[in-house]
Length: 325
Image (cartoon, rainbow, N blue to C red):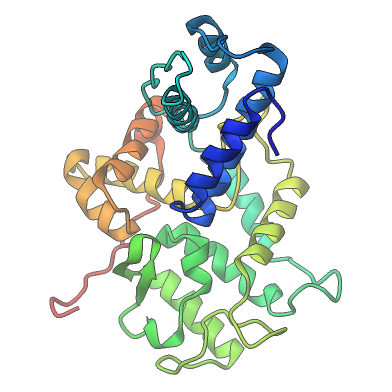
């Protein structure tokens, strides 16, 4: 796996790490160490050459999100520390500081119109496509847009957790093992009610809200993502000159739009945006307020004039919920 002059030490270190890391964490370390090994193959011909100049030159080759660069430097720094314990004289790189460099993509109103129009005209193109996707896709897209849901948690909603009378979704075991109640607008509740009638599914039972027609399970998140990617291509929605760490337009961006427009509505209603963060954080199921606050940062930086020109998008979205819920 490793080919540089330090291949033996890298293999020993990787073997030790494999006994304490999870499978996913080990894959990341393997990737980082392999890249570092490739760099050593090109730049180091003998032991004793891991100087400050050589190591800092390696750090300079790293690209991507600052958090990813930080993780890669930490992994290699740990290996270099292990190497130093064998008597090798090595330079330990300084771990770079992480800064918020992720910029979410916010769909414009015209792009959203194109997306919804295409979603409402989805056709089944081949036998591999889940037949239920034709009916379910337009509803799923609107749930992501109107409630800021994640696609993974959306497809796993069970009818037992759908309250159409009060317009509430109960989200269980979502990201970070969090539970939350998600009130829907009257319009979204009506769409979901008519969808359930068309699908012949009733609330309170143990069926999926978005069942698959191909297997005894919910429709796959991947199939929804793939269909959304087709819609983006068909409508020429893309991010020109996208950097490596930039997400660009994707299905998750519907959640970005929800958060962004929620802040816009709060501002227009005369509410202090800092006061809105805790409520929106709970609604979105974020693990920390910082996750929600970053949308406010991007709202002000990317769209400084949008607070004044947004339409009444979010009016009545957060329905009142009884205290016992």
